[in-house]
Length: 260
Image (cartoon, rainbow, N blue to C red):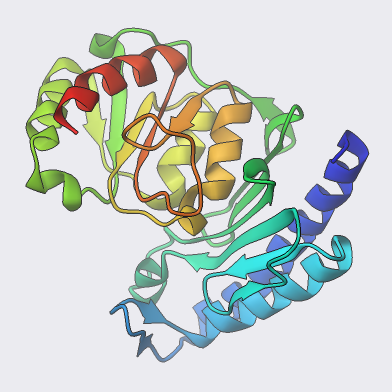
């Protein structure tokens, strides 16, 4: 995929996110009934209609690419190009009337994440990035902070339930004691803050690739490092995240790896 094609794909992804935002805002004001899926997570008509709107635009913007969505699964699995879509990441927040939910759209080419759009319509933020094109927020290119020392670091943790059940929990506690401050912004929010220099390290042990694929591109193109907790590149089976400034990611990985 060349840069010109990335631009077309990014345009389609941003248009798809805008279309999803219209659906989400409509149901945010109107209210929705909640269903519980077999995996015990909630889903609403807003999730489903937003994904349908996204799929329609992406299919036109990049014909032939496969689409893997949270609500409707995988279509056209033979392509080298795969869209990864979570139309409403943070449904629990949505139904509890808190604004920490977003639309996540990423593009993967032969296993490599090359493009991401993260749109939080009620919170009022959209960020996007493409490989080699940088990370953009409110029309300006953004970068991660230059922080290199744990003593100056701001750390945010999200879903860490699994982490509490092994030795890494004690390691995380030690890092928190060594840090400047600890926060728990969660969902899209702490990755947006990381990409624009307002946080230094994000740790999560319980995610789906659809939750973080777009955010990985956004953080990387802003100069950060984004892997799983073992330091491995992201793939469709990824379930954890270690993301941060280059120096702090390396320090956190060195501390967490021996206890993984």
